Every structure is written in structure tokens, then in C-alpha cells.
Amino acid sequence: MTRRLAVAAVLLLVALPRSSSAEGTPTPIEARYAHLGPYKVASDTVSDAAGTPRYQLLFPADIGTDGQRHPIVTWGNGSFASPTQYERLLYHLASWGFVVVAANTDQAGTGVEILDGVRLLLAADQDPASRFFAALDTGHIAAIGHSQGAGGAVRATVASNGLITTVVTIALPHELFVLEPPKTYDVAGIPAPVLFLGARNDALISGAGTNLRFFDEVSVPAAVGVLTAADHNTIQASGGGFLGYITAWLQYRLRDDPDAARAFAGDAPELLTNPAWQAQRTKGLLLPLPIAMSGSGGPALPITGAASAAVPGLLLLAAALAAAHLHRKPATPGRQDRDHVSQV
Image (spheres, rainbow, N blue to C red):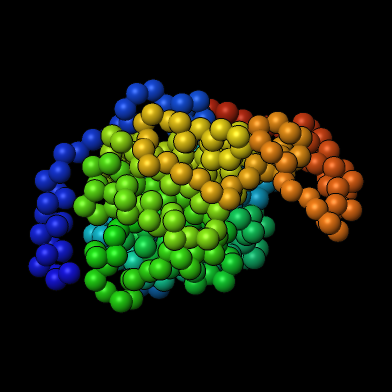
């Protein structure tokens, strides 16, 4: 595909009708996670030695004092976009307790800045002078991106050597739109569970057929869905109808949240029957272990041969986790005000 044809395609994309909300009423799980979470959000900027802003950070304002370790989300912008154009989404994720790092680059397709954002926070978790010291769940990290940044999220995940444990792509472009070799990607090489999200009014760049093919090409647990009342840039500004399932996926994959998991796993994943979405598929996704073993909401994990000897220990572990959940102090709801702070 020539560069002239690619430019023409982008101009056609700009002319497509735009929509920002999903059709109909959100289904229960989607609706729950589309609401802001319980955490008050703080933000900060990380600059280089010359004073140039390199990363935007959004995170729970009481991080480091709440006794919790928070999962990491590293974000990649679309072409010629900045983190401010995705502020609603990034703020939303921080309100659910995730620490979000967003690179100030409009060319995120290489994945370099996305992965460096992870390394930035991993170093902060080890630094006694940092507000993030011993406050990050470094074993649960997600890469998310839009358009070119979605390709960068794929590349960062592949290059992370297991640091990134799940990836979400929003409008991951057809390969014909990836013109520079440093930004090409092969979804078949994704090593972690992945959620592919597209938009019906984005058939040119990242339509249903493209996302279903990506889904078929991966060998890892995966889900795919195309939002009907959305276009290529719906994720910007308000976030449109994408917020609920992006948040639910992160809660499921980074926190083993059993309610969020049922959007994608179990006997009847909500995503598959949600009328606001099309081209929905899931594969290889299981409910969190204690839930699956209890028989509520989905089949138990298969246990055969020598592994069956571990069943009593697993049952004890499940009981202990359930007891810890019952006695865990819940987060204080209703803390959604922004608090800008300066110390990193």
C-alpha cells in the first residue's frame, strides 16, 4: 500500500460519521465498571533533565499510605495524539486503583516508550524516596493502546520478557496501515492474555473482520468485541462505551475480580450476548480459581493425574482467600475528586 493511498484512507476516516455512546442500556457488569471507581485520583508529570515532560502519571491519591499494592497500566497514544486526549479513560482507570503511566509521544508504535513507562514505575517501587515505594503490584501489569499505540502495546508486551501480563488493543490497525518497520507487529507472538476492541464505524482501519482475524491468530486466552455505536476515535474524550469492559478486563486479569471475570469467562460471558457489541468471541478464559472450583458461574478447572494430589491444598488456599476477602477493609467510596501533586 502506498503512502499516498494511506493518506487518502486517513482522510476518508475523518469523513466517517462519528458516535460516542453505545446503543441501548449497558448490561450489568459493563455498567458497573463504566462508573468511576472508589479512589480519589492524583496526577503528576515526569520530565527529563531538560524539563521536557515525558510521562503523565495518574494514580490513587492515597497510594503508599493505604497498605495496598496497585497494578500498573502503561498506555500508548494514537498517531498525533497525547495523553490529554484520553484523560477520561486514564482518570477512570486510576479511580479503580490502577497506577497509569502514559508516554508523551504521538508516535508510540515502536512500543519503546510504553515499555520504558513500566520500567520507570518498577524502579520507583524500589526507591525509598518515591511515593510508589513498595506500593505497586509489579507482578500484574497491563499494556493498553489506541490505534498506533495499540500496535505499540503489542510490541511492548512481546518485548517485555513477561513483565507485561495482559494487553488491551483499541482499534489495532490492519497491517496495511503500518508503513514503518519499527512499528510492525505480529499478534501471533503475543505471550499474554489479550482483549481486542474495535468499532463498527471503523471498518477501514480496524473493523470487525480485522479484529476477528487478530483473535484467531493468537494462541493465548483472548476476547474480542466491536462496539456498534463507535468509530475510530470514540475512545478519546469521553471514552464512549469502551470504559466498562476495559475496566472489567483489567479487574479480571490484574486482580482476579470474580464479578468482572464473568464478563468474559464462565458458562455465559456477558460480552457474548451484549446487544451493544458485535463480533464477540472468547477463548481460553477461565474464572478465578476459587470461583471455578466452587462450581458457581462456570466449570471447574480440569485436574487429572498427579495434579489431583494438590486438590486438598488448593481447597485450603481457596478457603483462606475467601476468609481474607471477608475480613478485608473496603475502600472508602465516593472519592473521585482530582488532586494534582508534584512529588514523584
